[in-house]
Length: 471
Image (cartoon, rainbow, N blue to C red; front, side, top):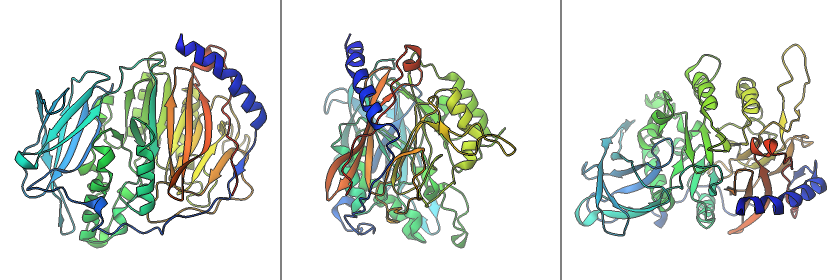
């Protein structure tokens, strides 16, 4: 009843705003930058090492299976390996269960990583708060997390979306604003630490500092990881030529649960969403493992159980910024037709250090010998959103192409984060929040209607863009 009431109230409101705002493309002139794009010094309190001998640090969790009732808990110890054991339970300091995991480490140039622990905790109850403890003796540390509701078509859930975060003061502003949002899990679209901006042993040191930097969020709710170009770390001058070495050792994904052959691409179901993570920097053309896996995974999607189909990828498919312009064209040529056929709702990307949202458009009618040359409106297409604005040390991508393309609805070169709040099977509410002089300011908002269910039940109200103050 609540779901139907929301639909009846929402639909006229959405239609009204759509009519009033159709084709209202906006390029914001806001260009204020709060702080210099330099990393926070290592002696800052945000990088503080936990007290105690061999105390666990850089604690983070991610989803551990396909349907959300498992987590992978990871942490690092430095003095000695210690135990790869997690104790957990449903009340504070009452740890009635335990799980054992595995430990790994690696070298990068002459840097030796700490002892990296990964523990799968499965068989959890849905929609339940769990308390957990890692480490031994007086140095043990305690945290908690909340499992998602059981998957279902009208299960409400709120995701945060962050990309290209880094570890600057702007990054800290983004992280703190996100933590005030009430979102329950982060969809991270690549480029984590920006440690590859350093050389030699400092690469590993900056991976460690980033892990401590984000722990105040990552230890308490799952971050769903995807990799970007700054995770590649191909550095022949240091004899480091194994791509994604640091990332793959530190940040596991539940790829086997979705029958993927690589942790770089995988899928999960969470609440009412089916989330597909793609790798921009792994082979994806026809017949490659990623291509074959995506073909099979899209056919596994059951919109009657998980109505919302969300794709994460690092390089934007559509981008009107001069930075990284058309870098996503090769993936668009391979996968865009699939995205439309399977009614993907929204595709989140990073890479470009600015914010941009598209209208529903496609370019599938074009080929090298005929067809329309430009993207055209297409109600069957996803919305494309770039959120590579987390705050890293490379700074903002402030130069957009002029004139603004017809497919671009709103764009601004500012730092920030997004949230997507799923209300039911038909509608979700989206916000992009700018970091504005240390305050979170909601700038771009719209109501997203589900590509599968809104068509099936006859609701065809398009999303709208919120009227914004141009500075």
